[in-house]
Length: 222
Image 1 (tube, rainbow, N blue to C red):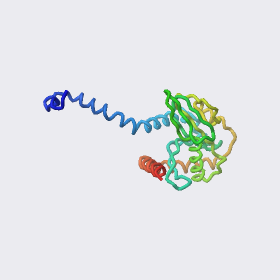
Image 2: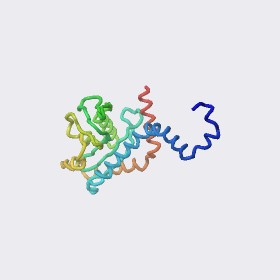
Image 3: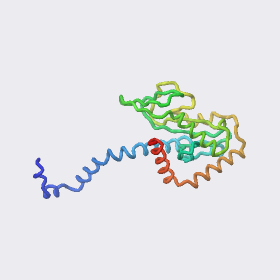
Image 4: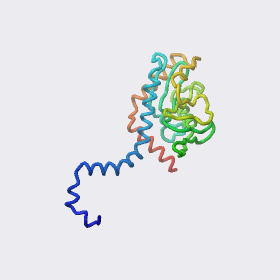
């Protein structure tokens, strides 16, 4: 069909639903690129919160989700997926929603996801969570030995290398409940709980998320 054949009368004959379908087909890849990772991460965190952590005994464990704290180096903020406060320590949980095969080691800078013959490298979440622990230890004024760093993979993934015991793809709740040696007195637990509750109530998460993303971009640019 030539350009001259695309007359206004021909275009006006296209039904509205077809126009909508065409616009949707054009914009869908853009929205998937911009929002896919965010939606995936949000869904994964909600899954952990409601299907795992929310089943912990609430008289012993206090659960906090999606916290934004200043980075120890003063360069913006860091975002913690989940924090569980208990007499047996403070659990800092980094969630990853990945499928396929996962390769890595405790000391490697990057880990690798292999799926559908494609490979994707991502930051070692143990190193990422170490930053979270340091930030939270500073906020709460606690020794780092009080904290338990946990990395939990939510997606249907298979570990193809040997990982430390605090890297999990199942059994998150039972792992947490397996710690039974008291590390904090109840008064300290109450202080931590109150401090994190205040932080959660004072945080405008939408603004905090925007500032957090901007900080990441600025650090990468520099």
